[in-house]
Image 1 (cartoon, helix red, strand yellow):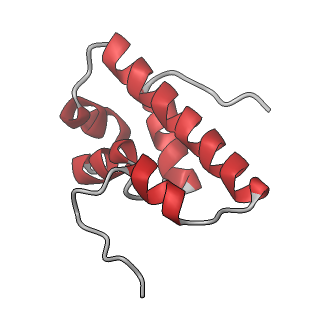
Image 2 (cartoon, rainbow, N blue to C red):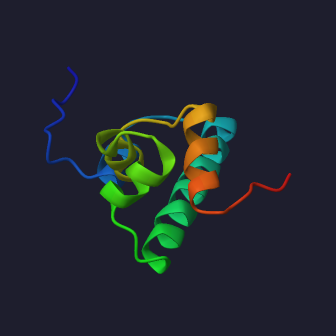
Length: 91
């Protein structure tokens, strides 16, 4: 029987119950690193989510969900946010 997941479950606790492949782990770590860099940059520029929303054209709830790790940003959303922060992704 699967244990029910409560809304208050922490990601690290939940992560222990789910089996991810090494590739999935790497993808999640990379995504989390990009999002954390966006958060750090937004805060270093002293921008609120609402201000970033106005600068980027991305709705504030979308930014909030991305920052909380609820949703993965679509590429076009990511580009709008990065442009508003004067940032680039270098590959």
